[in-house]
View (cartoon, rainbow, N blue to C red):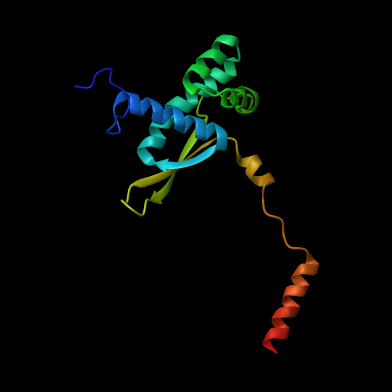
Length: 147
């Protein structure tokens, strides 16, 4: 029986697992969206949500606990100054895991994990439409090449 044994082992030693999740959380904080295997993404949620909770506390002890795990001053600063304030009114569920497909080499299921609340940021980064002048020039080139 697996009483009190939470978490996936991912076929790694405990030190390797700890380093893996530290690096995955660092990448998630840095990029706010990463692509990894399904099992790693589901396990990563636990660590990422704990870091955001520390960021929401905002006191010195929380800073030190976050730094003890992340070992990066830049990541801790971004976590406490940019990411955690976004979730001040939310009581959990700071990340979302979206199934993405399968990896080409070994057909491992791949997922995308990202912080929730990026909808307004994604809407702001929509690609701009071509100007009317450029569209006219392109259509004129096509008709000239065809005729």
